Length: 422
Figure (cartoon, rainbow, N blue to C red):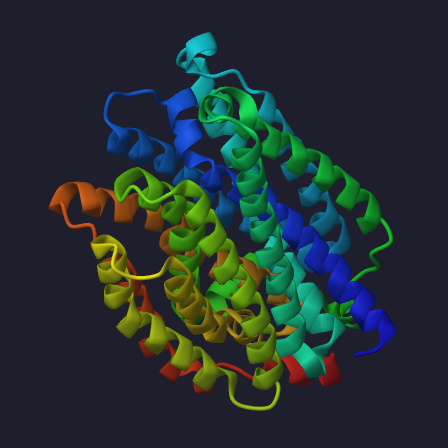
């Protein structure tokens, strides 16, 4: 890629990274937020409540994606992209200052829900915008460019979990529960505002000016009228990635330490290692996807996660395996799907409505399969008493993505076609 292409991809990726940190830090500190805003005598009930609010943030994403992508396809990607970064960063900072239930009573969880809705609404335009920027900046390297976006997004998650590891190492458990977790939100808000300053130098997506005169006046209507099948396909192929991310990032820390009673620091280290391995692997998968059919690489990742989910949770529940080995293998398996799904999704839509098509597919998929995964997994554990129950969620999502990958040849092929014709 040229220097200009690298600059655009990295700046877009940086915004996605900090947005992901701001959104995911909630899941990382779920057990502390549960105690502060939803105090009950039953730990599982508290976690179900806090994961319900986690899911509420995801429920706002489709609405945010529709509104923000509408303006992104009509007037350009830049203002929408950097504006959403500013708002979500401010919301994260406010969560860090929000009084708990003991101080505000019922108003405290209501305010938390409102701020999560704002975060979810803005994130609905952020990552789809980063994906759109990446493929339009470097259409002949779309797979690699999208993998850079998600490598940075994983970097944001690693930063969130490293923040957790640092704070839990420096502070006593009672200090973490009282105020230590708030530092993670305050840090994310400040970092996001600094990133907003860097984003001022981001130029408009190269693909948009070429077709500005022909920009769709009603992009959402056009997508729903002419591209319904690609939208459903995009939703389905993303299921395995959304579920894996939701379980790994938001569910695992509380599940392993709160339900299976693993050491919290060991869990955080294993989680970080998994994300680091996945980040390296997805860059390789994205690069490979520019040379081989991406759908086959995605298919391999979905299959590995499908067949490996139950053994993974069985070993965890039996406490008979090494966390480092287990999470390393999980990161390798997930990299194949995570490194290819975004470029595959972007390839389903032409430039004039790409932002909207990607936003609809991405946000609906991650709302259903990522936002709900922690809640469904925790509810299954409570209802069945099986510590391996979360594996059922991963198996179902892996099967959905695997089957849907066979429909891709009918709908893909728009990225290079658009870069030439538009």
